Image (cartoon, rainbow, N blue to C red; front, top):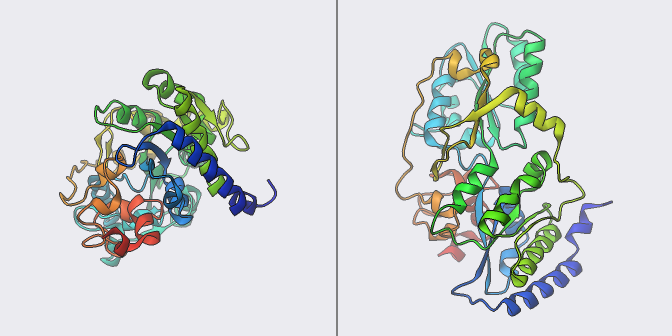
Length: 373
């Protein structure tokens, strides 16, 4: 690859769309009973809406938008945990920008900052560690978010803090993992998804081999995809070709970046620093056993939950927010009664409206409320 525009070529896109239409016609499904392909990653969701790929599909092919945006699945109770720590006078609370806007039970971290809490936006855990070095009299807490994509950078930051004997740095760990989540979705009896476009960034770390159970146990195809329009279209075509042939296997469209074995160094950092968190709550999805990560006991001095003796909050979502139904492909964003009414990117009620990778925010930006109505 020399230029990104090579993966945005409209002529190649039209050729792929023509092939998709041909395969869709041969599969023979209908608009009322379409072939449903779930893109797991929020980055894919954003690309689909930004380039209007969903509008160009045949009537019998449909995208479903999966739980692949870590900000979008932040439970309200965890936001309350973060706000409680941030309001401590001795704390500098550091987090990514999107996480500051996610609504909890008593507001957001952004609102906590407006009320006097020292909440700061950072771009990496190393930025938070730099804050700890610069403010030795304060406790610096980093809100560690993300799938296996970002977990290694947090792990390496913990190792750096340990090597430098920095004692005023901790993390509030909200790292989550993709494989138990996909299994939990597939085990739901009403989960009507025919195939998957797999996450590119997570797969850079874990590789393609961990997805084998999807094909072997649940007979669904999965194609790991890149993030440009042609990546998405080619991956969709690969999924449809498998469905037409009655096959189910794991394929790698993103081979220019993703290796079958993943990134061994990154996985080693994850294994060294974290252990599985058995009870892990997801916004809109509830408890998914074994889907979270927490610090191993030997790194407990960097665990904010232990340092501040936290009592975790558990709060239900607003009844009108149907984030869970969107994340599992049961409805489209505009089918939620709050969409564009009580819930918008400026005033989000649900987490899917906060991040640019959230299905509701992407639909709102590129389709608008008028089309939704």
